[in-house]
Length: 298
Image 1 (cartoon, one colour):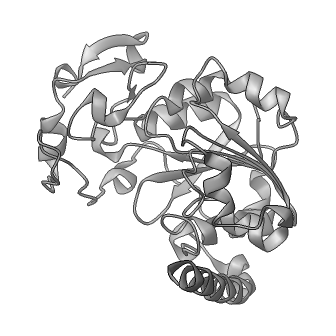
Image 2 (cartoon, rainbow, N blue to C red; image 1 turned 180 degrees about the vertical axis):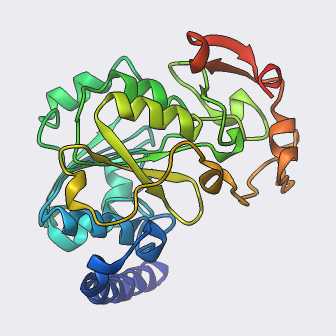
Image 3 (cartoon, rainbow, N blue to C red; image 1 turned 90 degrees about the vertical axis):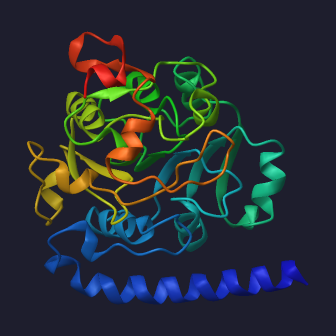
């Protein structure tokens, strides 16, 4: 019975989402920021609406996509794409029995979806993409693994996709250019009980992506995912390009997902979050990838 109602509500959600997206497309030429198109269907937050805006602006009807960090595909950045366009994609996650779990949420016959069950890291990312023929002609790329995202991105070639969405850690603030160390099987809870020391700062990701020929174009409303467009296609995007000299508007997040040393949610906010992880070791990219305790940078 639970499965029946889940499928029913998923279908209703999909239909409502399609209707909303088609209506919003009539105003795409008038929007100025990504918050204007922020809308959730199957993504965790409002990524679905933003992704459609970029794909529609670039006239991409059936995108080739890569998404790293999908869990069971219940909430992900590419599920709505796959269900709506029956396109070709690659998803990667270390969840056990991944294909079986994904198949409970989507119809695998509906498109060409490659499912890789693997703990992704900087050593295997290129092999996985090459071996599955996703090393070129990628339209949309997403990574959200709460860990060594920066080091994985560093291994990718320039202009590896047309559109990219990257999770960043707003707790690190707007000025620091830091990431967690390149630990092969990084786990954010194991690294620090608070779950707050993970990933990379927004500034670190923007500077890395600039070297790879991408332009930062904004974030979602919840301030956890940053969007980038390849320089080759940026002229097809109408929104105002953010000033990267002041990122404070993109790191002033109010999300409170911290946990106590006993594993219970304790809802730390503002400066209490970074205070909680000040003794964690991070890589200071600005200073030759120096390993340093976070409090020495604050």
